[in-house]
Length: 333
Image (cartoon, rainbow, N blue to C red):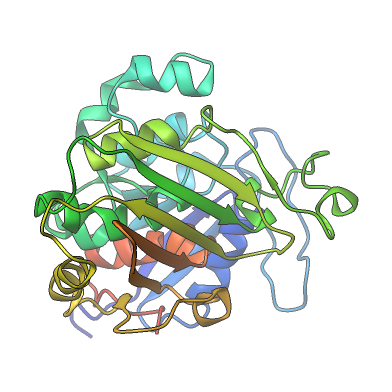
């Protein structure tokens, strides 16, 4: 077997959370990538027995074992990834961080959003923001990739081509009304995500204060995006309804054509000719489905993803495939 065909060995740090478990599920079917190290992210924690038959034991955190890996997935809370990333990089590993530690370029913006100084500002300049369809060349040569947040992924994929083509009114606000299943909040229980509060309920939250807002503004290159997240009474899935004002003389058909042309060759982005995407069409896939519709003088863009796949673990695997020189779709078909 040639070096390019050899099985790539990767570590999952933080394997007991939702994104870590999703990566385990995806890697179980990957033909050329294997999770050889499966660890907790909590220093001093004891090994965890398998939750389900066939699952691996989640070992105690041991950074010395990363040296035997080609790549490392960090599925940790924000603030906890940086020290592990340093050790992995020193061991020569490619790193995909699913936390927020390396998404924001400014330490000051990070501190304002997350309430603490950035734990490793010296690494920010080397981190590539891994919205794969828009950063593939940079991801290919990167040592450290910051996996985008789920809400930013659902918003930036439909917006970036339109902003880059200058098809939107530069003076009008862009409004994203976004909804997510409860898994987007992570595994740690809270009053907000308790079954009794979610079941048969629907609410907005974090209006004007959500931590993904500066990431969205940074990725789009504009702060005129108004972002309102909502909590759906479902486990997984995310749908963003984005209201834009096109430039004078620009139609919804022109916006749709722009998106279709930009993503025509992309395996994981589908632009609808008609109809609207639904969660059931994208859940448990790495797909982003996008629709465009005229609504008077406005245009409404709808974007649907699975927050645990395209919004987290699937996109992380897509990035790691690119970083390790494997076909981008492997393990994600």
